[in-house]
Image (cartoon, rainbow, N blue to C red; front, side, top):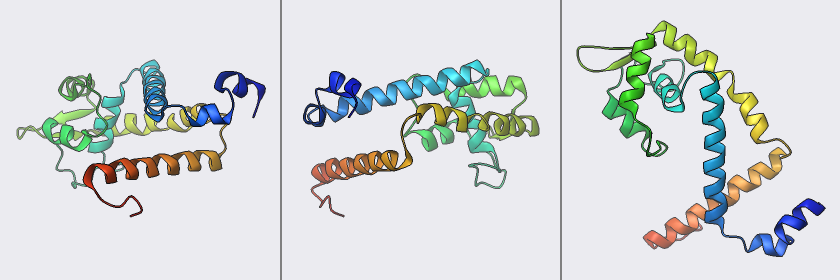
Length: 166
């Protein structure tokens, strides 16, 4: 442990007593703000990127070009949309840019220009990941994710009465 870590944490014992909800909440808030700020510098929002990804046959779309409605996207993205995210407004911006189209059926589809933009935007993610992970080796990161997964299993088991071992 570095002197900096000891000064800020009071050692491993004090760190082990820190509330996980606080630290995971802060990490979520700060990492999301960082990513969204980086995307804003490039002139797009995270929800716009998600829309493009979900409509692209070269990314997350699995509908064979059928497209999606805004309500279908909201349902698909409900586990990670933020309260302030307005997919209908974001879709309008993408329509104005010519990155998506809206059919008579109300379904949104990605255009060639939109897919090119999506692919370009995606090239920036590795550099952002590198900045976020700076000073953290993969083994520590994997351990952290496994610990968080276990905590999720533990609290879910408590909620539904199941065995957290499974």
